[in-house]
Structure formats: structure tokens, C-alpha cells
Length: 509
Image 1 (spheres, rainbow, N blue to C red):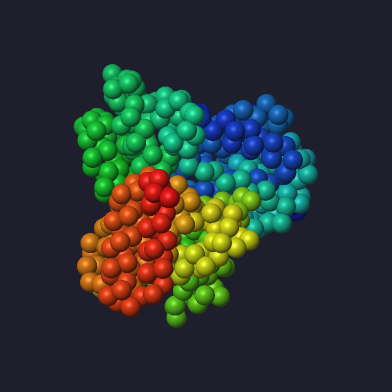
Image 2: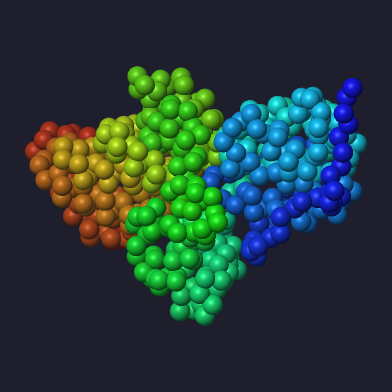
């Protein structure tokens, strides 16, 4: 004889949605986007790195839409679950199902949901993602009026799943026209700071420091909230000054928080543990990039016998799916980004692996090759492409230059990289920076050489672009003298051209 399930005493049709214990700041566009997707899809998975605010965003959304579900919004938290085999039981318990039968738990759960018009929120799925995917598929097939909203650091990989990434909050500077006081990150810091230190006020005297702090914390809500807690013992200026080691500084959240959310390091470490060994190694190696990068750069810089080039694409995809890498697509193509906080974590691992110097050299070699390719192509039909590409690579070029200039024996590579980018300094709006780097590299390479001659005529060109015709004339003459000494006929010709350009700018026709 089959025993039927009973609706337990005290069961509430409106659900079991937790109360919102803190104010919700920003995310207006994201919430509207989530609401739209939830209206169109029966399964929406919210993804993002640890501490980015997935659970809090979903909770806010759930309170906004709860009236739309006749049988309530139900919340199942899997964060503390250790055994993947307990997923079904944990969700059944959250739904307060009383089942005394000997049937499979998923069968009784599907029958209980049945025709009910409800929203089930499954929070923190990443560590039991396979079990969650199997159960969600069973439930959605059996219960036509059920919708599921999940949070996870990686998707459930179901064909009908709609994945919505939660990015970090907008930081000061993302929108140059934005008022600092209305920035999302700044507002969150102010709200949490006011809760920690009641007399804290955001005003003209501290807005600049708070804005810089939020920018340095990458707009990660957990990091911002942990920094706000530090105001009990430190000033905003002191917190910013100590931020060089953000992982040790940002500790000490609420005692009721999960261990992995009590410090920024623990939150990111949890994401690290979810990665496969090859993904962890790639994460560490990708930390050598500054800003964003293209896939071909990752293939060149990060591949070796342990990480074959042909595996990099799949590994990058895995890191995107686990919310470690951000992906940016526009008319210029697809680029990837490891935000500063995750890059710092990866760099620590790279140092422990003893591969930091090796990866930085590979990074330098890649951008030296890219610079030489772009120089050869600059006067061709793809000039606009190279203009856009090299402006995008500006941060990585800087990192490569700094490595070359500071590493004994690499100074000549700095000269080669700098002089290959003559068009970037003059045509892409970086003349002042190019001049400073060229002068620094020439000082680091005092011996006459063809590389030095090229750098001298490029410096003359840059000075002319700045309107410093006297300085341009001087550098061109120096180039001509040294070119004769080393037998560089091409540099002699280009030095003459630069002397002519400087004379023209001085009105000496």
C-alpha cells in the first residue's frame, strides 16, 4: 500500500522566503533583466564570482515577484550541504514536505509540486551542480507551473537554462559622466559604513578616497562590505593605504556568515577549489595579463607541455562558466578579463609554483611580436583594426615594457618594443607616455646599436608630434651620428627625414 504525502501543519502557501536584513543598493538594470528572463524561461541561473552578490540579488528579485506565484516563493539554501546525495532531501525539507512513503525522494518531490504555481529558488549550487541539474530537470518535466531560479558559480548545463551573469558593481570611472555620490559601489560602501559606524557621513572630504577604495576593490560587494566593517578601527584613508594586501585586510565579517564569506580570500578560495587542476593552473598564468586580453594571447603566453595550446580554449571556457573570467564582446571581437582581485589571487599561486618570471617573459615575447606585426601592417588596409587593437592592449604593453626595463638582460627588448610602436605613441594619443618610456629605455641602453638608432628616430618623431621641434632636431641628429657609427643606413635615412620634419615645424623651408 502506498502512503500519500501530507501537507504539514503550519505550511504556508506564500512560501518561506527569508527576510531582507540589509538595504539593497543599485542593480536596477540587472533586476529588470532578471525579471524579464524569469517571465520568459522556466529555469534561470544567476552566476558570478564569490562575493559578487548573487544570493542577495536573487532575494531582492524574489521579494519583488512573490505576488505573481499563487503557491508561493520557496527558498532552499544548499550552501552548508556537504553530501551531494542530500540535495533532494534538503530541498524537500525547505518545502516542508512530509512524506512517509518508501518511494524515491525525487518522485515524491515531483508529485508534491505537481500543478502548484510556484517559484523555487535553489541557492548556491556550484559544489553539487550535477545533483542540482538532475533534480531540476526532473521537477520541471513533472511540474508544468513550476519555475526555478538558481544561484551558482557555474551554470547547470541544461539545454533550456537561461544564464544571467552578475557582474561586480559599477565602480567610479566606469561612466565618466556619473556623479561619484550616485555610483553603486560608493552607495553600498556608504550604506554599510553607516551601519558599522553610525556617525559616518559621505561628503566632499572623503568622497575621493571612498571612490578610489571602491575602484581598487573591483566593485565586489563582499569586499566593499568587509572594508566598511574596518571603519570601526580604521579611517577610510588608512584602509586605502593598507589595501596592498587586500586579502589579509578584508577579514572579519559577521560571525553568522558562512566561513567562505567571512573573508575575501575564503570566498575566492572557494571558487578556486571548484576549478579543475588545469583550470587552476591557467588562472594563475592568466594573472600576468593587465586589463583584458584576446584568446590568441592566452594560447601563446600560457601554453606549454602541461597546458597544450589546443586545450586553452576549453579551459578558458571553463573559467568563464565558473565566473572566474569575465567575457566582453563587441564589434572588435571577444576579450576576456580577470578582475584585479582574482588576478592578485592567481599571482600568489603563480609565485608559489615558481612560474612568475617564466610567464612574464612569455607575456613580453607575445606583445613584442604583436607590436612588430602591427608596425608592419599599420600603413595597410587594416589600419583601423590596429588602431583599436593597440589601444585595447595599452595596459598589457605597459606591463611588458616595465618587465623588460626592470629585468637585467631584457633592456634591448624594451627598446625594440617601444620603437616598433611608433604609430601607437603618435597616432593613438600616447605621445607623452611614449616619450617618457623611450627616454628611459635609451638611458638603460647606452651602448650604440641599431635598436638604439631606431629608438632615437622614433623619439624624434614623438617630440615632433608634441610640438617640441628643437628636441626633435636634437634626437634626429643624435640618431644620424650613431647610425653612421654602427653602419645602419636605414636609420641614417630616417634620421634625415626626422631632421626635415623638425625643420619644417620650425618654418625652415
